[in-house]
Structure formats: structure tokens, C-alpha cells
Image (cartoon, rainbow over all chains, first blue to last red):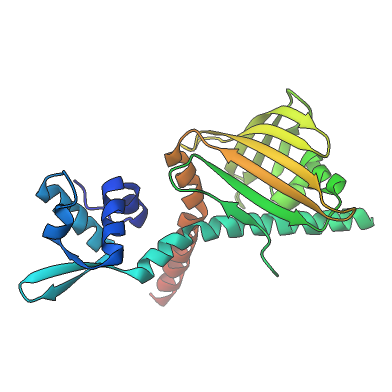
Length: 106
Length: 155
């Protein structure tokens, strides 16, 4: 598997989305996360690696265990990804409104 | 200026809703979609062809400053109901985004205000998400280009 750092690539995968929602409520170890899936442990590790690489997950060493927790700031960025698209339409419609108001007053 | 445009794009769906209210009578709003010279003004593109009628088709094109064609799109009109509804296809040529079906509903709110609901249906969830990301990716590219410009000036 190619380690892509694209956040959208990361959340496009259903298993990774499931991991994110698991970790959203509490930080968990890789083992605890893997226990929630039927997939092989190395596959889950790979998913964790991808999510960590694109900064959706962060790691914290706690004794001998590594806990994964969600990076809320990065998640917010992803939630806002629709904003540029909305902005583009908003500007386009503002233009339409301006053009038609001038047209009306001609 | 207050942003009046709302986008409703649900996860794992292949469509989206764009809603906007205008300080324009519905007749003027509708006109903005059917007169080629008006479309050119607000879309910032050249209209090569626009047959505003059922079974009609349209073609638009934008050139960059060097005169090269930067953007081409076209489609056919399936339903044309003045001041109420347009159903048409839209396809950006030479892109992997496929053909989208667009349902435009024009609604009179008051004598001077109106509402547009645009329902866009894509071929797949993946294609919809690609299109949604488009301005986002462009934004990143632009920021990157600007950065490159600044860096190149430093040399």
C-alpha cells in the first residue's frame, strides 16, 4: 500500500472512518482498536499509520503502550473542505445578482 | 457581504443541493440563465452556443491570457419551463468528472425576491467528492504558486 498523505484519500476508506469514530470518544491502543475489526492486525496497523501520517490521529506514549487519539483541529479542517466550493458558488451568485440589478435599472 | 449560498452534501451520496435566495424577481433570475450575453457576464466565460429550449444544447469556453482554451463545458437541456424549472446535463470536457444532471428550480418568494434550488446528481459518489474538492485543491495550488513566485524572486 502506498502511504498517501492526502487527508481525503485517508477518510475515503470505510475502515479508516470507522477507526476515527472509535477514537473520537476515547484514546485507544492499536490492539484495542484492532479488536473492533475482523481485518488482520497488520492491516489495521497500516490504517493507523496512514491516519497518523496525515495528522488525523496523534500518538501518545503511556508507559509501554502507545495510545491513539484524534486530532480535532485537523478533523475540523476536513469538515470545512466544502467551504471553498460553497464560496465559489456564493461569489458566482453575487455576480449574477449584481449583473441582473444593473440590467433591471437599464 | 453575508454569504447566502447553502450547500447540502451528505456523506456517501452522489448528489448535492445548492440553495440561494436572490434580491431579484424570479423573471430576472431566470433570464440570467437563458440569455447568452448575460450568462457570459456572471459566469466569466464565453458562450459559444445556448439554445434555451427543450432538446436544446449549450457550449461554453474560457481562454487563458495566452488565448489557450482553459475550460470547456457543454450539455443538453431536457426540460425548459420558463421562470420555474430547467433540467440539463453538464459536462466539463477533457476532465475525469463525468456528466452531471442538474435540476434547477426557480421559485418566486415575493415580487422582488426569488430562490434557486440546484440539485446536482453525479455519476458516482467518488466523482461528486472530486468536484467538491476541486476549488479546495485549486486553492492549495494557488497558494503554492504564489509561494513559488515569492521564492523565485528571492533567488
